[in-house]
Image (cartoon, rainbow, N blue to C red; front, side, top):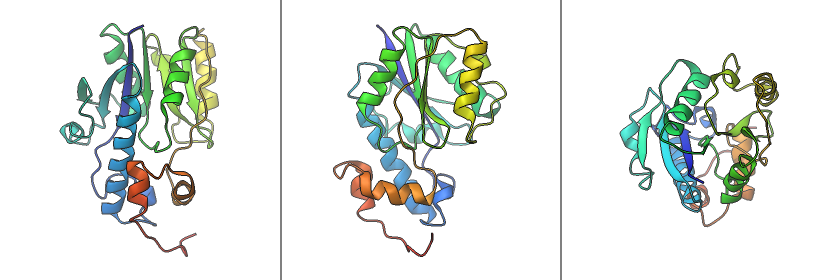
Length: 219
């Protein structure tokens, strides 16, 4: 089966990436952390039998990602108005190249493993759509066998109900569904504090966290 992966991200620029962590870290540290996340994701994707692509946020310089994803067949800018339309456009672009299934993931995923991605592809062997949930009610991964704009339209991304509302849209579109495994993401300072306890010490993220320090009175 011809399969593809898309890492959906923005370039790691100080002051413009991981800004919700900036009460805990400065802009340079946030950008370094984002870079470490992306390098770890690139390594995980290399363990999966699938072609890799990276889709860069429209406000960023997509060429900055080429060195982070050297194995990617293409690094391209996201297109469309709003997050849902941009995800749809990226999936449609890659699926049009003849892939039988495509999995798009976010970039705030330092604990992502090859097993998460392989589980998503296994789900797509019989289902039309898969979603990988996060603990806060969102999802870190969406996989499709053919484009479907309807499952992204009208969604409020970043809220605690987007996983369930997307599942409702999938059913309304008459598509079959199989969930993927849970994976934690890192959005806010408390996520980063948890990550320090659970991160793989030999990962890019783990090594970077050993060099970062912050004031624990920021609760």
